[in-house]
Image (cartoon, rainbow, N blue to C red; front, side):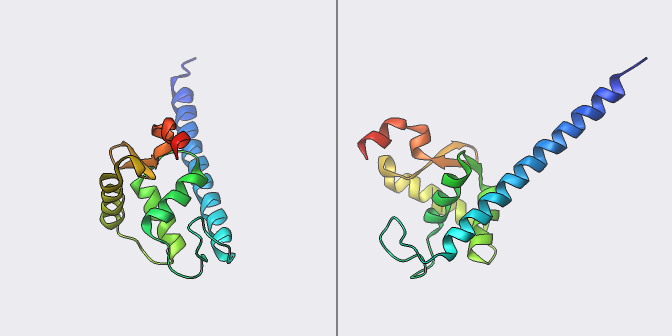
Length: 132
């Protein structure tokens, strides 16, 4: 009996399962951030969350902290668009992150891990976390 078709079907189902697991995780992260943002707590910066719209950098850092892993810019656009309640342009978000990384150098809160993939700088440079 040739089992190659069954093995192909199993591999395809596992791929679909991985995609669904990633989607579920992203939605859970968005829900967690939305519930956190709806509470008028003080952000790390000391200002009330409801005082002003957080910057793309602040929102990206929050999204990455919740995900626990680097994310592609498309994922970040989806989460930040949901948080802001309007569609964020990929080019705008990506250029903001790239400018932040270039301008802040070692003090940057974000780092580039792969093409169009960003994470927290402390994940890439753990020694920076000790000096901060």
